[in-house]
Image (cartoon, rainbow, N blue to C red):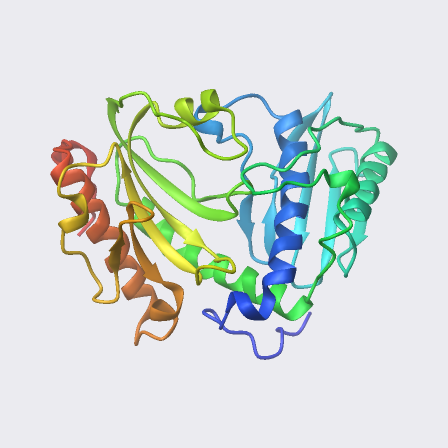
Length: 308
């Protein structure tokens, strides 16, 4: 039996200043793997076919069709390997270590070829400023194993609470899943009503993709690990945004409305340092959903669910 990782914490410190280079590199690696899933998987509404899923040790594509077989690609951020498994028993493995995005891309494509699963992807990253083609990216090359493992721990803790939150809804709801373009873990509830056409304009994302994603009214929440300009945070927004949404009082006290982002935010550190991090996050998820659904007059009597 494998021993537990030393000093493991469910809500570890994860300041972007400490692991930003690793985060930026890992973002590009997940984009490459995500684009493989995009190339292999049939379309699912709101681009749900492209997302990655949380595992106990990282992120996975889940089973993807590959001709008459299926294949899975998984980031193990605890043992630090990218693992490929095909339904015919063949497998591949790439050690995760400091290496350029170009090297990671080349190694993954070679592994897929060896598994008779060659695939062509669009090599330009999505939803990032000044994108560099994957096969030309010699800039991003960092991988700190300790912080990669911390990131996995945060994803697992956020996934646990968000999954419990998701269970309290009877209407259409997304999985708790990871969007590699925006590099965030999200869950989205739907009112069932159509929404006004989205204006588009998301950097690096075709307008038709954005408009299909927001074709119906949503209340969406998630975790984002931050960047050089903002700390890691939990967020919650509605589309379309109801009047007086930003003026609504939400919980816990550390939560606030960002006029710049047009959404409620809760700093990750406020959750991590709370007496009960799970309870603090659940308060945020529930109170921001209540704000969105009440102000937009969702039919909550037929959408909300509780065994209590």
